[in-house]
Image (cartoon, rainbow, N blue to C red; front, side):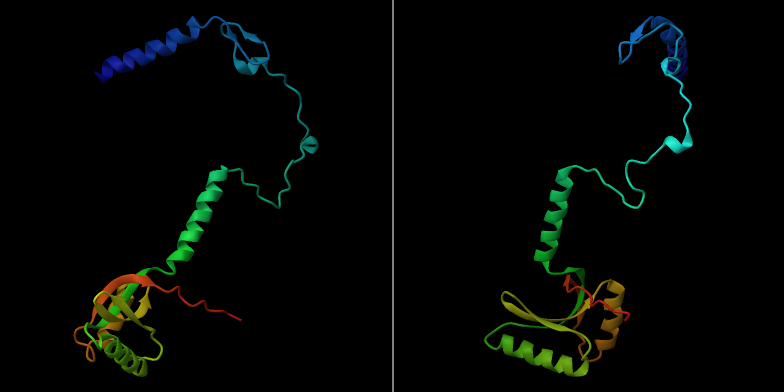
Length: 172
């Protein structure tokens, strides 16, 4: 099958150029058989000093579909509404009942005394109040912290969650 296809390609490349007698080009020119398009071009000497760039070299101009701007703006709005990025937290406590909120806030206060540099969040997911801590970008970071708190909170585990944006470190 591939042999037949190869023969067809070879014959087509030999026969097709001779079958084209005349082709009209833009500008009203007609190509005769055997004449190349480059033969019809006017050859004028190009002087290097005569070439002037139309766009200054210090700027880049982007020509794009206006719908791209719309998509970028929609993405920005969605990210602002989301109020976070995907990441991990360590789940420490969960309770339901009449005093669940109070118990979760007590656990949070105890945690913040022990680990002042780690943020703690009380989250309500019906019917539970949950205490989750940390804003970890990777599961490995969350795992390292889990090993630190495992002795005080033996039931702790890692959960995927939307985390707050990391604090920007200024170098000046």
